[in-house]
Every structure is written in C-alpha cells, then in structure tokens.
Image 1 (cartoon, rainbow, N blue to C red):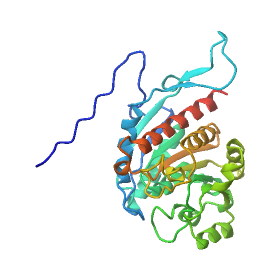
Image 2 (image 1 turned 90 degrees about the vertical axis):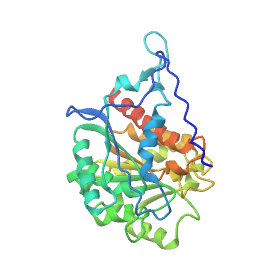
Image 3 (image 1 turned 120 degrees about the vertical axis):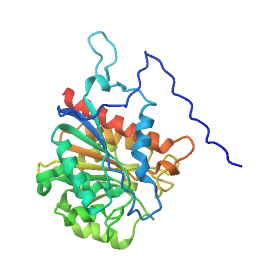
Length: 319
C-alpha cells in the first residue's frame, strides 16, 4: 500500500514581515551580489545527492527575512543601527549551471562565473559537493590566478590525488594557484592522513587546525587568513565546506564529524570574510539536502550563510 508524501505547510504571509530570497535573474545591469548554483556531485567520494541542494537552499531562504541589526553606534534617532539587505543591495540569482562535473561543463561553469563576477561585487556559489570550488575559484580569479588567494573553512585538506570532491585544492595548485596564498581553517584530527598533511606542509599552505579555534579569537584568525591569501593583491575566493561544522548542526554533510565548529562560528566567519573587499567569491559546499535531518538544519544553515555573506557585503559597501 503506497502512502502519499505529506504536503509541506505553506509559509505564512505577513506584509510587515517580508521574506527574502526569490531574487530576479540577471538582466545585464550591475549587481552587488550574484547567486549561482554549481550542482556538482558525480565525483564525490561519499554517496551524495548534493546536486539537489541549490534548489533546497533557495527554498530555505524563504524562511528568513533580510533584516539585520548591525553593530555600532545608534543612528541619529538613537535607534540601533540596522538595515534590510534586500533594500541595501541589488541581489540577483543566475540559476544553476549545467553538467559541472564533466570537464567541458566545468570549463563552461568557470567561464560563466567569470562573466558574472565581472558585473558584481561578490559572487556566492551554491554547491554541490566540494568539486564546485575549482570552477568557482577559477572563475572568480579570472586572469588574476597568479595573484589570487584561497581561504577554506573545511575539516579536510582536499589535496587528494585524482578528480573528486577531495581534490579541489590540489587541482587549483596544479592549475596555477600559488599555495603560499592558500589558508585552510578548521582542519580536523581523524579526518585526514599523514600523507596529505605532509603535502600541505611541503606546498607551503597555511593550516589553522581545529584546535586553534578553541583558543584564538575568530576575528584574529580571519584577519590572518586574509593577510596571507591577499598578500599579492589579487582576488580571494572563500570555500565554505559546511562539514567543518559539528555533525549535530550539519548532519546533511556526509563527512561532518562530532567536534567540528559551531554554526555561529561559521556564520560569523562568513560575515567577516565577505566584509573584506578582497573577497570576490564564496562557495558553500558539501551539503546533501536529501540526507539532512527532518528539520532541515543543514540546508537552513547554508541559507543563512548566503545571508551572512550579503550582510558582510553590505557592511563593506557602507564604509
């Protein structure tokens, strides 16, 4: 006997509480932030349906408003500093790119990211597994790959051999990214191997281990990462692999482990990074919407990372 899937309850409507998301498609005019899906999944080392995640994140965005209470002095009326992202920024959604797991699809995705980046202050790419970092970072860097930098928040080095979601950092180095301008934050014990740890050291990658995040100020760590990745003055791409988070808040990431960072740490790091003008691209990787907890907590976190990136950009543009 078959059972129909229960219909999801409709979201409430309140004209005084407008929902975010549902942004319009590109129309050729410049934008502040452009969202694009790069639904990679076919080369994943773990079974995943991460290609279904961009659509799920867009749906989850509708659960939130774009209202932000900003830190700082009160305004002229004595009220808290605040803004509405959908009023402060022009945000567009370029949809999903086709077949990014194939060599030709990856090349076309990189080219499309480059085109979109040229008309926006910040590009946010929705994965997809971590294979999306290759076309996203290449597209954001464009002709400036020789001076570009990369910051990853990830439990893993992603320096594996072969072509998979475990190899994007190694592949970017082989394609011309200088490893001395790569910073990896959140690398975890029991999630890597001696060989790949040694490879990171031999390449000269800056590694900030998970344990350091327990004793150091996060803003200080982000500042160090930006200084290293931006040392040559080129664009910086940021890879947010959500499996850097504790498995309790990221069960939809196949490789998340108990003991990862907290959701609010990843959210804060995202906002701090997006506020820096050298950061031109951010990708959100490794969430499998079909493997999430029933409450959708991992996908909701990914949606909030989009909004944190937008909040950081708004802060940047207000200076």
